[in-house]
Amino acid sequence: MWTQGYAAKQAKVQLEQTSFDLGELGPNEVDVRVTHCGVCHTDVAMVDNEWGISQYPVVPGHEVVGVVEAVGSAVTELAIGQRVGVGALCGSCMHCEWCIGGRQHVCPQVRGTVMGEHKGGFASVVRVDHSLFAHPIPDGIASEHAGPLLCAGTTVFTPLLRHNVLPTDRVAVVGIRGLGHLAVQYLSKLGCEVTAISSTHDKDEQAYGFGAKRFIATRGTDELQRATAQFDFVLSTVSADLPWDLYMATLRPQGKLCIVGIPANPISVVSWNLIGGERSLVGGQPGSIVETRRMLEFTARHGIKPMIETFPMSEANAALDHTRQGKARFRSVLVA
Ligand SMILES: [Zn+2]
Ligand SMILES: [Zn+2]
Image (cartoon, rainbow, N blue to C red; front, top):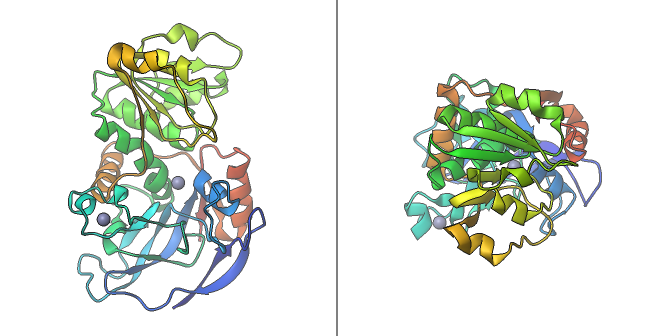
């Protein structure tokens, strides 16, 4: 099947409108007609080949919301016209140890929506490699808000489940942008005491609005140094190379520093910062099928919303630039 989308033909060029062939619809596959698509930093990284893994043409977009347009012969759980979302992952083998254990996101054969030859949601139609990666959107979530949940939302929500973050915990969120502003809301609704950490104080009123109780600005202050042994969990959502030992020192005994942003350089910490107090340094990624669906349910139940700016799909380049330059407050969403 032929469809159209916005593609980068090589690194660091403008997207161009292009037609491409999705081929025959396989038995477990689903085609989703795109109505909305969020813009994530990973889209910029794939268009610009920041990680050296891009295969051109790249059609970005992995916070996709739309309606089911066609289902393969083996798909019984989705109806034509049903509203669904597709995140960073669009398929996995469905039979390995990890897939049958409900952890498809760590399957060795997991397929990314904007990875390899797969075409993402800056397009009329997105093909999902397995129907279970097309997630029904709860009624309480507007389509324009659903997109950012599907990558940013699951990326920050899953580590809270994985690491058993409790309502009694004191948690810090580093970076109050696309991911961080959702993390503060989730943690606040979980009942945690949330501290927002950003370079300056210019987002503190907004962070308090998302549910933060405290705010730490790091640039030109000693506020971080004074936060020694205060947090049970620190979630870093930024792609900057941070002074990791300073952040490790903010952890209470058995606390965890969880990295979901993607810093360019290796992360190193003084070994005593791990050994003393049994502290951990861990990573997180967008969650499994069931974790993504629990995140959507929790989001609907608590009325959590990403704060978004919308662009028409025809301004895909402007929306991508907005994210590339770090100007989005807090997430850009394309509307078809
Ligand atoms: Zn698998
Ligand atoms: Zn993403």
